[in-house]
Length: 271
Image (cartoon, rainbow, N blue to C red):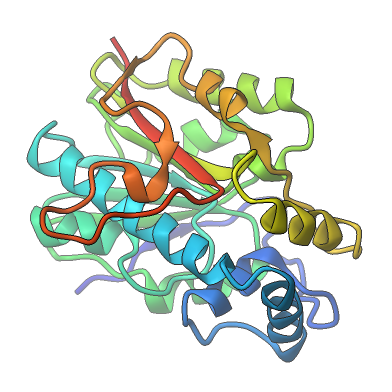
């Protein structure tokens, strides 16, 4: 196994604030990870007391991503992945899912959380045949992200852009759409966009819990109606079954029938 490259950004020397809950660490807690603090566990428990289904949302999101990657590697022939908002490593991270299917896969992770940076070298390793790199950058700086990704990926070749539960952190919807468009503009024809985010209109308890979390002073995450999530794919070729609740996106054969949850996503190809 080889250590991943790490590209520091302007925020590389930020300190970790253990007094304020952070969404990446809470998400890690819900996924069963250990890279979190008591303040994150307390916030996660308070959230799940209002909405116990949040653990299902988190784990269904990860399973959706795994199925996306399986299609991209085995059916679409994709060997390069740009995963923005990677969060803290837990299980079935993008490089693990992709390199399990093809050891030559190359993955660039992007995040700007100092705790993620601290753990990147230790936990995001690669096969000898492939590559894994980490870029310390903010989603709102797509040009820097693309420039840094070129150090590891050949962006003249089809690449999968992964935005999993990250666009909800961009409060301004038009800005979020502009970011997606700019990132996809930097990728060639035959590339793919994978998006999944928390959604409104399915589970009132989820919406209540998230609204309360946003009002708590923690880093907010905004649930959006399904049509807004779908619009992130404008100009691209959506794969069947389109943008759906994530348990319903190409469930594995023989798996129990999934119920719709407040998390929607899809996968689309750039013409």
